[in-house]
Image (cartoon, rainbow, N blue to C red; front, side):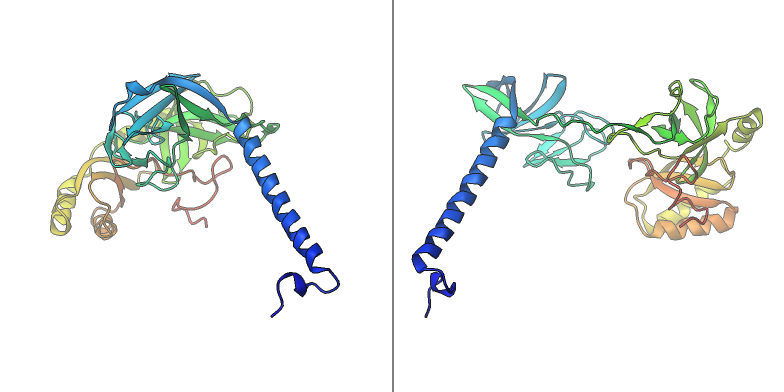
Length: 328
């Protein structure tokens, strides 16, 4: 049976073996050089003393403008960004079970070793490598990445509060909408037409779009008129018997689901019922039954979930998907 070197015709066995060996050594050497180069590029900064974080405990450290949650798991230190991406609550004060910490506000769960969000995929927190040097905790900071040149995306942006739960997000419009701080505006979201409140002075002109610029949640259509505001007042009352009928239907399926609030959308045809409990498939059926009985479109929305994703139809929004207006 021929050895590996003899399989290459016209090349002496010794030369083939040497070539393979040189290739292996060169590849390993380059890999080692690249690893050393990456390690050299990573900066470490001191954040505090290891003695400040006892076994099984956590502590918030602030350094260089960062708030970092450090956890001591069996003598191994792990660091993640202290702010929950859902509502910004402090993760360091959450309940720790194994390698999982629960956000104290809404219960989102994160793996403190990897930074992954185990309860809501796709919402990780930044993780930092921790070193202990002579009793001092130091974290690795990735090198700064040069930001590409910004460009104008042609969208005016407005910070808007909307919905009964008071969600806050950036909304956009191609044409400038004349409005000021605290003005009420009509916006188009993934749920349909809604009334919102301007929280900041509109950006003067169009905001440059960088790699970190947020995609607008929806479109600002216009400043709310007196007629618009009067229409909202007329829709503030609960349709007689709606919540009672809802409770009866829920009791027959799952008594643990509790409706705690409702909201009319600006279109006057849609009612959103906010609930606590598990989002069951039966809720869609109950919504259909209530819609037929009360001649409104009735939707259920969990109270502790994030706001609807970006998607309102229109030039300043996403233009597709989930809005109920027939766009696909």
